[in-house]
Length: 312
Figure 1 (cartoon, rainbow, N blue to C red):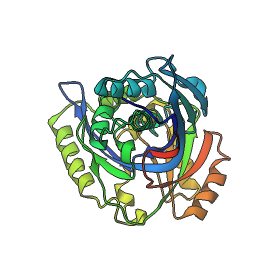
Figure 2 (figure 1 turned 30 degrees about the horizontal axis):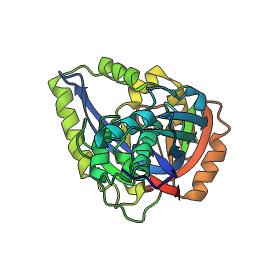
Figure 3 (figure 1 turned 90 degrees about the vertical axis):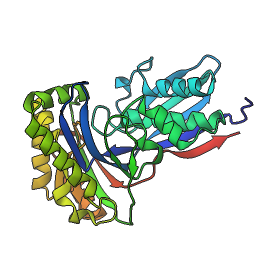
């Protein structure tokens, strides 16, 4: 393989989940999950270059000290997965600049893995199609395939293909309140299982919620028409593990948010605003709250991984 591209820089967004529904624990130790993804305008940046000593990675930016740089790192795992798929040794170096908070329910690690798949595919000129990149990503993390294209999509369960949602010109304006502590997905699901034991009634309720989620016109209606659909089944167990989430959600309601909910398995609280001006006012108000270490504005939906610069 002749490689002519010397380096590439990419940008990848965070995500949040306007709805997340979880079924009871199955015999195979997985849960049935139905969720809505929305990519939002909060970005990590990934620079990729050739490196005979690779694969290696350096991480700077927001909470960079919390990101492993060994074989646990999802960027390195993504590069190795694509390299194995096409028969290329990943002799590359990554410079990852973090802006997406860690263990916050915003998908930062998965987003970075998606950027690595897209970037290495271009750097190695391997022409792997998006569907195959998404399949490789699904083996790295549940959320990884979404970030290849971004915008909005339905997730219908473990390693099942995403359903991309049609989107109109409606903008969702969000304020994100990030508590000081994060949560591990594993601990949240363990708490969920403690609260919701497996039972026929629990399965029946989940299937009803799943159908309702699928039927919502997520991308083609004004956000304020969909307020009753904004719900997260993991909010209860996450709040039990981290009471700051409940405090943060109450603060958002008191500050005048149109809707308040938790993203993913936590711990980020997300607040829907009427427009960008309202979001800016909410952000300023919520920055006064001691419960949040960081308060950010973002809007969605936005596209997934995109190339910033390619050097030849």
